[in-house]
Length: 461
Image 1 (cartoon, helix red, strand yellow):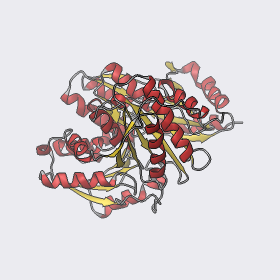
Image 2 (image 1 turned 60 degrees about the horizontal axis):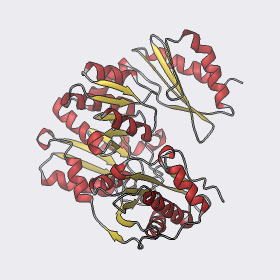
Image 3 (image 1 turned 135 degrees about the vertical axis):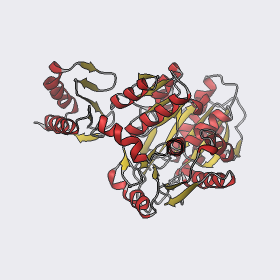
Image 4 (image 1 turned 30 degrees about the vertical axis):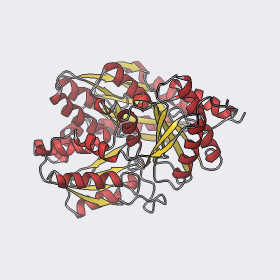
């Protein structure tokens, strides 16, 4: 039995040819089909979609063959982002969904994201390991069900209608927005939203950058979390004198915002912005946040009459906690934003629509909406460090600071809090990398000093 190394904690990702190919995709489809049959679902239908990667279509075809041979009907929504699969799964009330995507991974990678009914995530703890074992054995029982059917469908209009439900057209004031799809999967959604804006006389002007889907990624893999991937959006904002810039990753489950000066806004501060917006509509609601950076979010949520709830980082954990708490919104500093009305899933389209409405209603520029929060809680942003021995390095930092800490928390990595500053250290599950986040209370110099101090400790021999 050969181990399939493409199975990760939350999804499937692997190098093409060796870790992921058509044969492996077929086995994954077959194993997922058997998993669904074992669950005794009444519905035997799965929606599938794929991003713009040059191999996504053929991998999707092999996956679909596996599903059908397990007796599962397949509905193919075509070129799509991950959230379109989430939407199709809960909107059509089918047994599950699979998006073939490598998001922001290198050119020679691809992968898959699996969900079950209601767009609930399938991760290591909720079925992915079981699917992996069946796929690895590669000895499938003959299905007692007839071979599943395959049909292509179009859910784009319904999806666009759902997105438009998050804003009130009458609230929107004239705004000029730069939208960079990065030649990924977002372009067709942006085009349809533009049509909708014109039909409803919504005065949002879209300046589209790299909008055409192109699996060759002529302008680089879309991953605006990396500073080197932000220049095109920032320069377009300045060139067109736009009110805001929006950039997506490959499967657009994350969106990244730039203010009217072309400055990149850390996702952390957008979480607070959206939390406040939802609490104005639903007083007392719960807001989920991750532990990496949290003081700004907690402060805003409590002052807005809401209840902040901390969850372990990662979409499977956030979604589970949101369901448990019936939270209206959840946000991670990595620019993943989750919405109760979107089946508790993350969306890259809903945030910028909401922020456009916020700017319209408040009359403030995006920079004005976040600058006070950045001053109140300056942060380092996430700093990744490649280390030979991550655990020893983290222990060295812990030993140095723990005696003076007011709070020690191990919900997700190591968090230490002090009167005027705090930090979180997390070790990657898949590589020898330690991720550091530091924030302070109204003291950027203290934040910068402590960041340098911790980095020196991490790298000490």
